[in-house]
Length: 343
Image: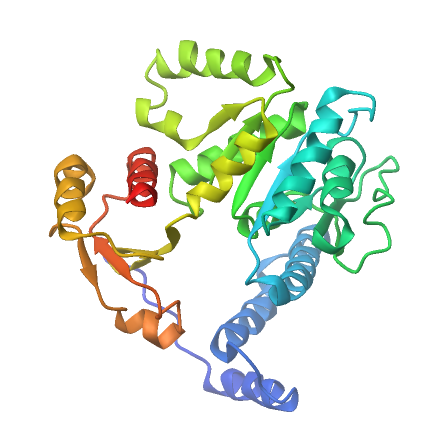
């Protein structure tokens, strides 16, 4: 079957869009912005329902503003904290969240929460407003922002859960889940799904029980006895999360993930891992032996920054290694990062 022919471009439309961009004195990403404008104009004919158009309109506004707000803090690592809005200050889970917020902020991480009461407020109390972001959601009933973040400029209000959840994950370098209800479970499973499928960066996902508690241990038992036993997930997927009831240990799980590992990206078929310290030849040899199953090409090796990374000014000062990752076994990739952090 032949592919449908691509509609011919409209030179006059492109010229007028460029005039608009020039009128606003240009700026970043002009080609992408021109494409957004062209697609917005297609809504005039392609989408008749005004409610559908408002979804696009509102989500674009929310994401544009959120990216603008987070941009000045891009150099600071952040932890997204999830947990129940119903947890009262008298509960040990609340006090744990305060402790965790304080300790992770002392380690140099900012805290992102949903800005509501309960665990969200506890995280902000611990981290303090200067080290906090609030990502609130408008609900049919009143869920105003908690008093810690209410008057802070780093508070955002979202209409849609899907735009809010995108920001929670996209801006995070780690995720901490405290006991919670449907929302907490939803957010935790989405984070796992995104990492399992490579739709977001690998990051620490720490499930924090109250001291001696079994909330997440019971959840983990269900995962192992049903999802794993019935082969609905792979054994390596269990590497994507960790459980503890100790806030000091939770902080160590997060900070140790970045002991040597810095970041990663795909450059075409090459998976590049940026590090603080390059592994030795003997360490690389051991990794090539232990992780051959996830490598589709040449051995894992040290490389210079790729042409694309140089063009993007993407951490070109850091040492890096690269290989052809199979884009499937992200649980094993997480194990490789753990090995790199022990080198």
